[in-house]
Length: 238
Image (cartoon, rainbow, N blue to C red; front, side, top):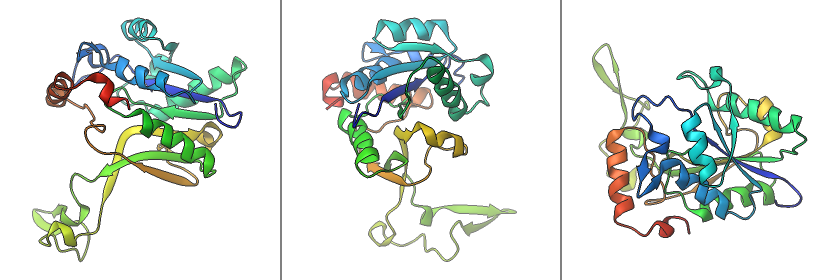
């Protein structure tokens, strides 16, 4: 809690992963993947509740074992086409129906296991201290958009008109991309948001390796296993 504002951390984890079956409870560094996000959320003292939103009984059991609350989401909000924001709408309505004052929500995707506690806390503090509506973490862009191309009927053209892809990296504008590690936002703003979680007055927190790593497929998981095996787990949570 900050300034009497209740803060709810939400970890969305549906059971139907196609790219890596059973991904959310697959062991990483000796503990289930989802437990990494639960652990860091529980270490941020400003967070009042840590909730896993899932449709899967196995994920629910593991989440409870590692100290999270579990709210079961409706089946229609756990399909491949379902949006996380819709599950957040549903969870917020459920919590408010129970009498919970949901002031701030912090979304922690379980596929970003190495996020740092300080980055979660900074996102929350910036949201409150600067009276922002939403804050997200960003990292250096993997591909600078000035080096991106589009193919029009097989003809390559620069994605940004007038850009010069051949310039040295130091001469290109600095570019960032969403890292996916942390989204902090005022729950009251969800109604006006579209599909995204950056809305209203926004802010950014810059994160870097090794704390920003998103697991999307089997190769990513193999890399994550190498990172986890070569480090002290607690070093990721500082």
